[in-house]
Image (cartoon, rainbow, N blue to C red; front, side, top):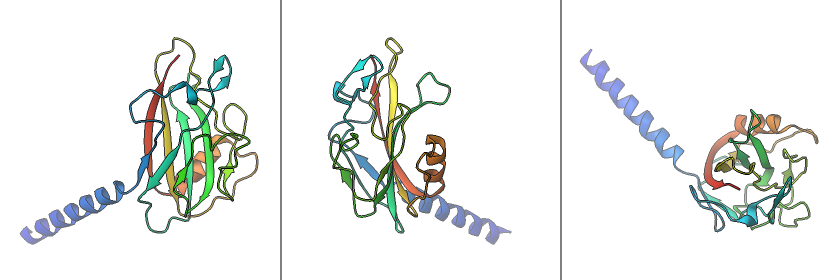
Length: 185
């Protein structure tokens, strides 16, 4: 029994160390936004009563797990008063050799989206980045910018919902990293 306890403890220790090391490999950085800090008006939506510049932030990532075939980027506001949050951006099938996007890459007319990538329809109804636009006086909202390493490129219908896109990305995710920025009006 003593040997079983010893081996079990060793197994659990190895499992925890192995999973912790894997969980910490991906990193997401930005020269435009910071984790826990307020975004500038540059990243505010233009419309719906908001008058920002509607530019997606510059993002760069590293530490993708072995077997990564593509990346996806999401921008999501879990605090939107909808009952289901608000999808600001879903960009899928970014080639595995791409590890950064410049400021405003998510604009509708952007030429900075890597070839083969697809912008999915956001909750504003456009295939682009849609900036922050929380209701006035609603307090600070959290904007989660997440990069996902994918085990394969995704085959999604042209009119796939944000929920379907989110499901498929998470089902094929090998790892992810997030910056959670803030915004209020």
